[in-house]
Amino acid sequence: MRQWTLSLAVLALIASPALAGKYNKAVSVGDKAPAIEGVPAVSADGSTETTLNLGDIKEDVVVVAFLANHCPVVQGIEDRQVELVKSFKGKSVKFIGITCTGTENLKEVDGIPAIKTKVKEGKYNLAYGVDESGKIGKAYGATVTPQYFVLDKDRTIRYTGALDDNPRDEAKVTKPYVKNAVEALLANETVEVTETKATGCGIAYKR
Image 1 (cartoon, one colour):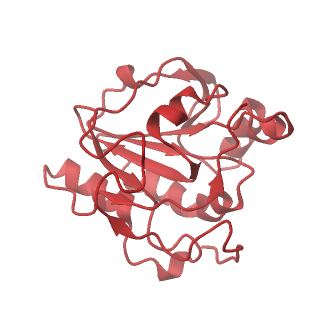
Image 2 (cartoon, helix red, strand yellow; image 1 turned 90 degrees about the vertical axis):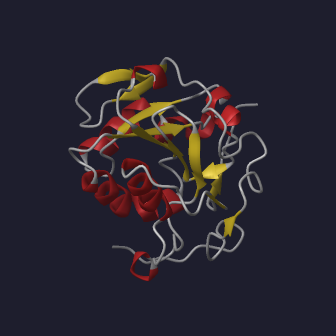
């Protein structure tokens, strides 16, 4: 559990529920998820290098998390994200992480070797890839890290936005948006909150 302080320029105090499409200009809830193909990645246990392909995933629910090792907001939710993944062990849920960092000065900290180290340290327990071109991130409308997309078995977007309602302080979380969305889909129920405003570090897309 972590509590930490970030400038308001980086992080809003809370993530606010909204109508689908309000915060994401590329995709809306109810849209088919953009393709994810051939993304170089590290396996969930950090033992091997692999590739991320959305079409190969067999689980009923997929959670796509746009992350970045260098981002203090991502660092602040690492522990709760690990616990979230663990909470769905044995269920038909697949978590994948993607970084879209494309700037040269951040490649060392956000690249495959650094991701492998973080996974082995227990900071991540999901397959985590690098979309250096930024093509996938832009297709999803990802603008900050962390930012989440929950997909159903037809790979339709059912939730997009923040992990929960208090990225600053895990102890004050009252609405675990991603967890609630996944649980609803597994139970064949309607996701109540479908979009929130993701807040964090702006994605450094390649120019």
